[in-house]
Length: 180
Image (cartoon, rainbow, N blue to C red; front, side, top):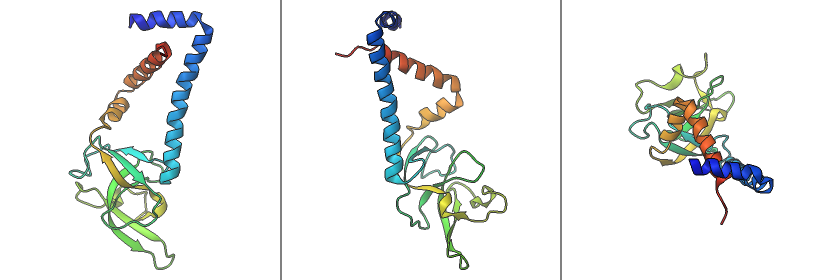
């Protein structure tokens, strides 16, 4: 850590090197954002990667699993694991499609979901008066998973100070690292 403080002081006196390192850090951040936006475009999902936050889908998915979503295929079937968002709620929900219903009047496909580890369907989670999900409520269908890797995200959300410390340390190391 003393080495980083020394390098930071040395960097502060060399404005050209400081500018180079700040641009290097900005390039890393913008590259990550471009990758995220690219994934959003390819998968047609506003959130192409999500973390399972509860045990409602056990044993299929554990808390902390990372799911990769794809919303490019419009058709969904009974048994598909989908991530959906309820109006006026911030956190998306990962559950399995229990029933697919075709509304005869409108011709719209409506869905009923349920967590594998839950006793009842999700109608109690939906917005008041809502009995079915619309296809527009679906953020994507789960197409892949990474087991337990999302526990880092859960820890960072449970302890927000840890998030700021980690981001600060990463920025410090990027700024004080030397090329070549």
